[in-house]
Image (tube, rainbow, N blue to C red; front, side, top):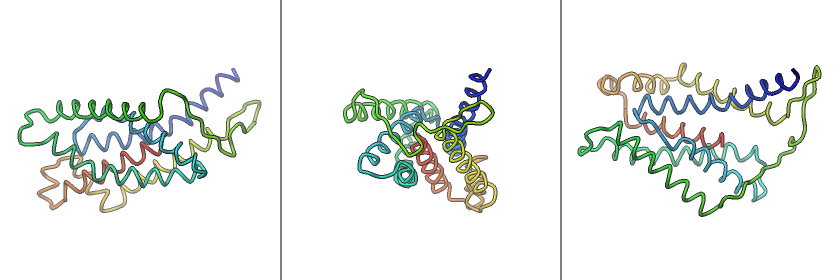
Length: 207
């Protein structure tokens, strides 16, 4: 029974990260109408880049905002490329083209990661590695709890941004109907770039 409860709590902790990623993924789909097959690869690349930063002596928690900023910038400037390929004049089926393009992107990213880091597993240790919080006969690793609270905090921030800011309102309008958003004066291209940047940033950070 104890093992079941501990497993359940650990699952909830990790689930907070999946919720965070799913918000970015759903925003990306809602605004760009593209299903990104490379979502797992953004996660993987973020993890490897975080490991490289860790190897330079940076604290793993310091690397989180760095990953967010770096991949936010990458996503912001890469989104127009995706949009051009997927929604170009010669494209007859944007949804299918989006699947094909992001699948190709996933293969490319996996090849790059394999050529640089190989097959070996990498480990990152923090001051909390191996430490656990014991209560009521249960033991929960501190890292699981930290992951939960970081994921929860980031999720709340994004939801508040969407609900309470003008930029978030523009993003929601664009997700509802790009044509109407454009008629209302919303810069659809900028909203799309911003959403994709947030998506790549939080996904890479989650890695």
